[in-house]
Every structure is written in C-alpha cells, then in structure tokens.
Length: 297
Image 1: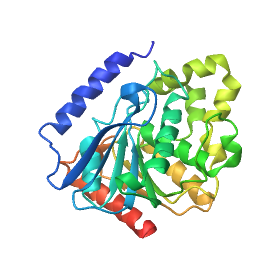
Image 2: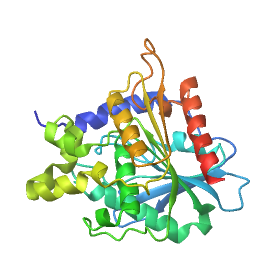
Image 3: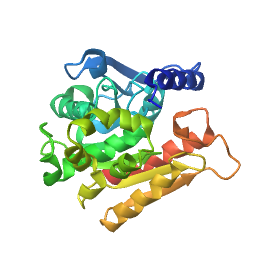
Image 4: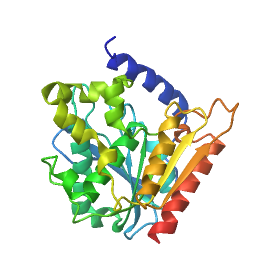
C-alpha cells in the first residue's frame, strides 16, 4: 500500500492541535519569528526564543522537529521550544522541506543551512557559538544524529556535496528523543513507510550510494558529542534507543540512556515530552536541560 502522506499529516495535525490547545507564549519570552534562512520560502523559516531580559550571547539549543520526515514545522514545536527557552536557553526552532515532495537529502540540506545561518548570525540573536546543544525527536532525532555525524566525520562529509560548517560550529551535547538511528536496516526491512517516502526517489536513482549516505551508524566516531538518549514505555520506537546508546558507549562517547514511564502508563507514548501538560514531560525536559548545563558551563 502506498504511503498516504496527506492522511498522515492530517492525523498528526489533529493530535498536535489537541495537545497544544490553549497554550500561549509565556510572558517572559521574547520571540523573533519567521526569519528566512534559505531559498525555499515557508519551508526555510526559523524562530528564535529567549527570555526578555537576555542581552548577551548565551547557551543555545537548536531543535530539529519530528514528523516522520513528511509532517511538521516550527509552529507545531513553538510551545515546546519556548518551554526550553524558559530554562535559560536561546532556542532556534525551524521548518524544513518535507517528503515526499522534497525527497532525501532535502531535509538534511536544510538542517545544514540552519547551522550555517547560525554561524553567521549568532551575535545578533544572543547565540553563544561555544555553547551549542541540539534536541531532536523521532525523525528529528534521526536527522540530528546524521547531521552531527557530518560535523564530526571527514569521510562522511565526502559523501555529500553541501558545504558543512564543521570548522565554525561545535555541538557540545545532544538529546536524541524517541528516535530511530539504524536507517540502512530500516530501508532493508522496509518497515517504515514515512522514511521510505523520504528516501524512495534517491534509492531508485542510486540505491548503493543512498544506502551508504544513510548509513549513519557506520560513520559515528569518537568526536560525536555527549548524548542524552531518551525513550518511553509506550514509544513505538522504544527498541531503537538502547542500541544507539550502546553504540555511542562503544565509541567512548559520554551518554545517558533514560526510559520514562512504567507499565500501565499508556499515555507515556512516542514524543510524550512535547505534551507540556504532562508532569513527566516537564521532568524529562528538566533532565535534558540539566544534562546540557553540566556540559556547557
């Protein structure tokens, strides 16, 4: 059965709208909205949030949103990102091109464009380039792990034509939330329809090259940043978290693995941490920001 992107988007949007109903911009947060970072119109816009009293460059989180590579934008993630900003960070929240209309490697190219923009505009938006952290959930966690590998591995960068600003920005820490990481296996098992919608065109054009470019776990090395790897009891990607943790530990990377929730907590599902009304979401987001604080200070 062909993946129905429009139905998937509609269903996700319904759930996200219900989750965030009634949320507003916190009184102590200043927003810089709809800043263009690239050439693709509405898909290349970003927001920046920080506390109103911030007048200096400070620790910064760049968030890469989820949505199965086919859904989502910065508006869906605004409340989560502003909640992180309340914890004392400048937060960059951006949209990127979505599949299947914009197939691989469009999304990762847009991530690269954001990081490049950040290196060029940091001072104007209270961003400290020496204290950069990354969050990513679901598909965003996959994109985060891939982009950080591009920053950290010379050989992996050679597989792509884009100019990666590895010499201008260093990510100090990352939180990988409810993600999937062994994407070569995902392709070969044909188990993830949204991901196949993202990479299908590239696979048809050059399967061998695409499999190599998507094989991120092969290229992760000791330069990958310290990582907080999170999942939950009823996350449908729960089984993907611990292998990533073990891989990073094997590479000598400082990392934490955390499973939130317990049996019977059916509400503790995929990307539960985005539901700001959940006590467990606040605990998780506190934990991750504390992890960042320990590393960047």
